[in-house]
Image 1 (cartoon, chains in turn cyan, yellow):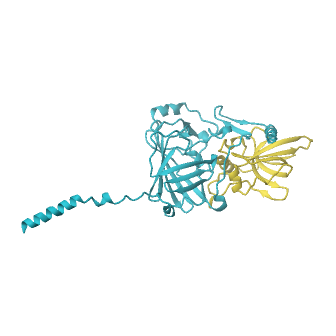
Image 2: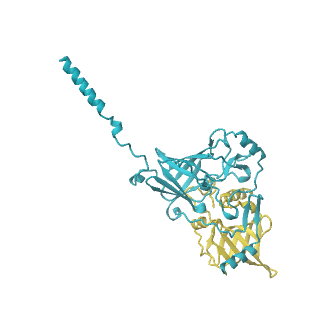
Image 3: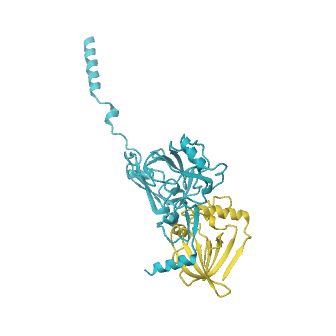
Length: 279
Length: 146
């Protein structure tokens, strides 16, 4: 009897060893954002569009500069106006291009969320549950991947071109509701700059985007952007974004090289416009 | 010509206008060139209504009392912002009579930041605030980008 029990135990043990573990056989659950049907379960980022109502430049942030950045900041001279765009409307890139008051429009397909940015008519493509390429080419919006943590879309972006990078604010500046360019310090970023955004709905018509920037050539610790960017939703006709193509017919343009606003005589510009109309 | 300059605008309102104008003009310059403490009225004949980005421009021929004429250029919002505010590229055409409010250039150039436009048919194009999301307007609310 005893021997029969031993044989049975050995047989059962062998059988169990031969069985693959249940966790190994079950297909892993697909991460959120993998199917068309899931769009109905995602937070509604997609209806209408979103406009920032917060300052496009940051309040002072507690992120100490590296020695190299500190030396740059000590030499930095305040600028008179916004150091991007100029006559050619060059985009400031991430993150400021999202904050300029022009609407953002979210789209979804399995494995991707896209964000059309009306200002400069650019679109971010955020690959869900994916990986960055080994060697992302530099772009103004960066290479973005994302995943959901509950109802929060976490977006990780790398591979930035010469975007407008705010290091911080000049001493005693940047305390108002809206921060102005002459209050801020701008400079070059490092090759491994990384931005992490946590995007979620605060209520049905309010979206927040909390940004943290990692760049160890500028800051000794992560730069947690302030204020948290708040966007309000437009619905209906107002929720449809428009195209945005840069015109060269501006009387005014800021030249960041000269740190000067260039003004033309409107009569001269009008004459030029009419001549162009005739060609 | 009718160019009336008023400095009666309150300091508080001027500050609000200035701040409000910052995001509006951020596409390529701020409103720093405009004197937001002053408001002018410019009346004349439309030469061109340039529906464009980053800013639309209204060109007006103004007849002065001495018989001479001036060309004024008034800067409006981006096309998307104006459209959401109810404006249209077909609202004005050359030859139309208009009366506009504007904030003048600090350096005396014949330009301004465009406010309201009164059309000859009585319609008023209000200084376009884009599409105001709910709850944004009114005292204490964040100024809305134009």
